[in-house]
Length: 118
View 1: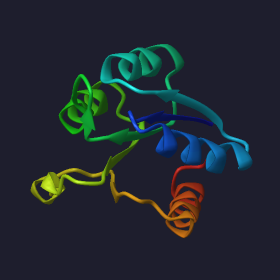
View 2: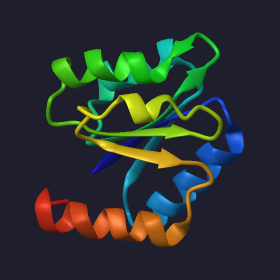
View 3: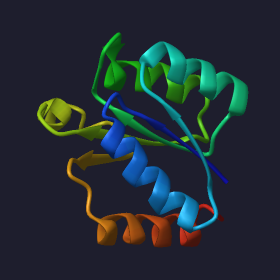
View 4: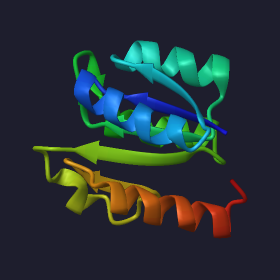
């Protein structure tokens, strides 16, 4: 399975990449919305971890368009500062508050394995 980590914070990218590679996922990273959208179109990852505030746009607003284009993509929205996700009640994917703990990621992978056939 392929995971795309779309975040301008290099530390988050590195930590998530290490977590998923240790579990034998193929991991791609991008640090801007434009680069991330290119990776999604070209590599078609199975899982996306996307930050809200990116240098060139609002990741969470882009998530709605991405979900329409790629309905099977498991989108995970992340934010350390912005709490606007409380207005996204209709959003059916996962919303993470940074920092993300390893036990949370382990639980998420267990859910995916049971429900999505990772």
